[in-house]
Image 1 (cartoon, one colour):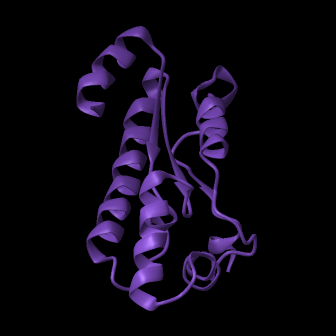
Image 2: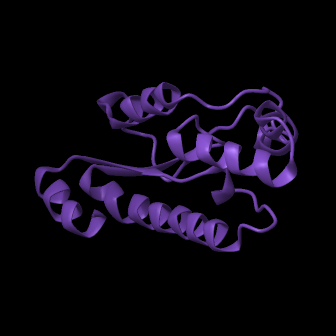
Amino acid sequence: MMRAAIPHMYGQGFGRIINISSVHGLRASAFKSAYVAAKHGLEGLSKVAALEGGPHGVTSNCINPAYVRTPLVEKQIEDQAAIHGIDPDEVVEKIMLTESAVKRLVESDEVASLATWLASEHAGMVTGAAYTIDGGWTAS
């Protein structure tokens, strides 16, 4: 997608690349090798795009949320509850949020709000960055 969009962005002298990465783009977790590797790769690609795009008015950043309340995550909660024989609330508390200081899932509108700002002209000097929405997971 970036390959297709960047020439147009360069041509108009303005563009915003906003990659949805993950807290796992910054931190590893056991049993998630493929996901962690893919997200680390996305982080690197985003930084290269930032360096190459800067002279053309194109920024590139990553948003790195922890677990976002989506149908996919809700299904993961149900599956983990069944596997471990515990209540779904316990899955969230004891498995998903153990690393977070703020003990709740990220809401999709929080991610959208950050993306909206990154897409704006107000974020013209913001490039090559990774923005966490992780309740403090990566603070330690």
